[in-house]
Length: 346
Ligand code: KG4
Ligand code: ZN
Image (cartoon, rainbow, N blue to C red; front, side, top):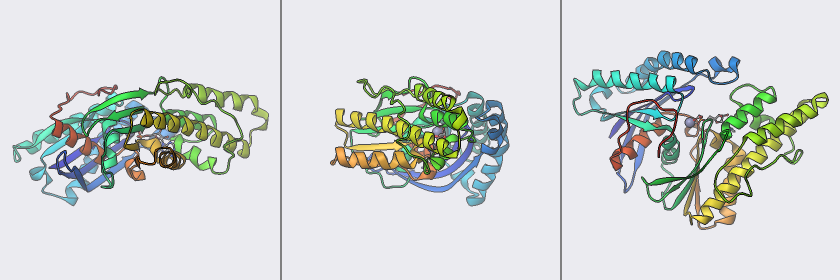
């Protein structure tokens, strides 16, 4: 199945061409072309994503990326089996740009390619299934999957390839959002995750004993806003002494606290549900401390369990993962309305 996938849920415009095969028995993805156009420079002066600017940039970037795709394979309007587009969750004005673009492509291509289909896809499931993109994940169930991005922090339990249940989520800020907000407090540019990770390398993770919110509660939910507020107070109380070392110490201590909570809750869920595989994905999965700590902890505490995290470029937003999510929707006969929504449905 040749899938042209479009992703515009936030601040990355992405288009990919993916060949999916193997069905539920042996799902495989060959990424034929994969383009991402980042809007970071546009949003950076505002310290975060501005929805209407995102919409304008998506409208500008989509035709450019499509041209690049057509340059890699000019036959795709005739040979594509499916156009897949993210419909939720995300910023609605941004999502609509992708949906309208996909609809008009579908209309144009259908005259020469009557078998082509158009389908909506879930961004969170895209992150979840991004684990398949490097061809190195052997799906053994049950699987516990942590999806941590700028908009979501969700723990999913998968019984098989298509049946998933949300077992936990953040009650306030998403993990990536907490990184972004703490970065802003430290005077670092957007997006904050990579900036915090960078300055944390020079800091002491034990310097400040930040709280580990909800760690002792017997559920799989997260909360990051208290941790962010603790950083705010720490900086305010030490305003006279703020220098590069103090900032690095705060960044390292915050990163350690956030990673601790994510790892402990994921491991607890994996134990409770007898997970045979643990997966990690979403933009925050690009964080080296999180990748390394979760991998090490799975190995130590669940020796029979396998761990997988996608390569860095498939952790942050991309369209190849949307093709994968659309393929699994197709395999289980799931249809989504072509309507933008800010909330996720499972
Ligand atoms: O999945 P993603 O690209 O977009 C959303 O779906 O939100 O995730 C973006 C988020 C941002 O909050 C960004 O700061 C965070 O992922 N992020 C990181 C790192 N790289 C990106 N957070 C921590 N450490 C990183 N290295
Ligand atoms: Zn994302």
